[in-house]
Length: 304
Image (tube, rainbow, N blue to C red; front, top):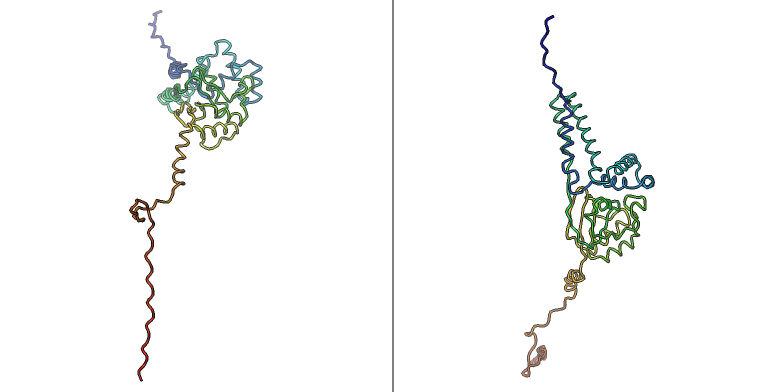
């Protein structure tokens, strides 16, 4: 029987969604732990996942328990690979890669291959990373408004090295919370006034008015009344403001113009308004004498 020549073997073609998946993974791994800056949700996960299973259960009784399974999953990963920034973010990178694959598949079915590919590649370009620079000095005090913004210092302890958390009484792990337990408002106000330089860490959208909680309101009231802003930065959902205590001289100098205006005196009399005597003394000018009235005229008697 005549043998038929073998045709070319079909090439192995990878699915189209593998391109956005590899693109997303490469972008996610690039600079994964650079700067050691994390977002608010990452900070909460990093903080809770390092606790023991019993402490995680105790924490879920005080905060939202919707992320309890995820915290337990991250707790297991930290136990295997260590509590690093790479371990914290790698599951998110893989999840984003899976999302890019889904976008590509859906786009190909709805609008064609080109639309699906562009959509999957564009998904990886959405996240943005910002970094924080060092603003404080060793020995400064630090306050957090609200209290659970303390996760910034717990995730990046190197950026807060040398700072003193003056409002904290019990740590987050000990109190089973995300922000820890703070002192009463009067104590916080007094401790703030005893400092010369304070670093305030808040949300970027903090309103200018009073805070809803009494402890946070005591912090802001003391800083706004007795301190001056010397630095102000906004980084990834946080606002870092440095305050310095006003000196007594600056307060007096601000009030001095009001004192001068309220203590005005009447102007002194001009020298021309007085008559100087020969001996150099000053003699008051006497008014001129009033003219005497003329006697009434007499009528002549009528003649005979």
